[in-house]
Length: 423
Image 1 (cartoon, rainbow, N blue to C red):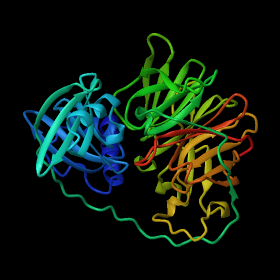
Image 2 (cartoon, rainbow, N blue to C red):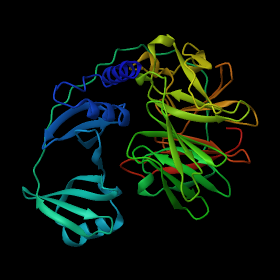
Image 3 (cartoon, rainbow, N blue to C red):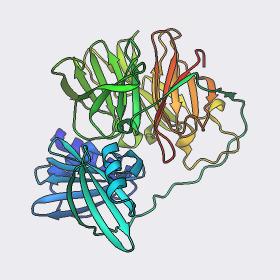
Image 4 (cartoon, rainbow, N blue to C red):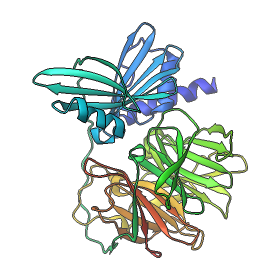
């Protein structure tokens, strides 16, 4: 009975978070509902279709279109996400340039199915539409006429919140060094410094840990730990990697750099509306710390950081650190917030072992904060929007250097930047 109640609460919470009902149709099997909710807790504008005992969901995550195809038992058959043309594999781009130079690219999608990846590209020329399917090597798998698809969407309503008074902020200068990341890390969402210039990285969609070598400037290894999802942060403790999903669940990947990593999923107690993006390892207390970008109305005008003691890997029900949103340091000069909780939107969390201070990245407000263990903002640093378009990942090297990642956009690739000590 308890499992059933928990499942119903989770489904309802996600429906509220998405600002519209996920289950307007009554013919979606319960197993499909549960699996979809687990994998995509922040999905919005969800529309369902079913045919031949399969169920396809079309939805948005972070403003980009996705589709997921399930069996009636809730098994994921196929996942597709819309991508920009520039992030197609180089062999595919070369093939398009060589054979379809006179066509315009209307849409491009990356599709995962049966442990393989292929690419779907829709082209147009003088009202003639083509749909091409490529593998990663640029080989054309199939060509067919394109059928445009349309669907309506509802705009999510957000209540207005007044502007803030001016406060003093410390500007941040240019990064010392930067690295361009490959297209597979365009949506890099979390990083952890290992050793010998090696970073462990995760990105929003794939259940994969990418090892990026700063010296070689390339991904040297990919470690799969789960299927497609919404992954937001990573912390490494010894030989174990912990990966944060956006609903607060934690993937424990034991011996992650070994030959046979083993994955265990640990449930979250946080509200679905909290949309977790920050994960840090607290060495002194041997625990993980989790911060939410979103909100929980039960906390009032506060946001919380939750702890997961590593002796039992169970998230504590109440925050161990409470951050008051009324702090003067959180106010933005002349900026109107869509939502009262947008005052602070943690996109990454890290703990500086040397000082004991917590560092919070806030991509929405382009800031970096240092925070005491009592939840007091000690320093506010403005980040350069030109360099850090969307800062999502933060980590410290063993020498105290700060590394920040920013997601890629239409005009640039994702980057890793090294910042001066003491920032």
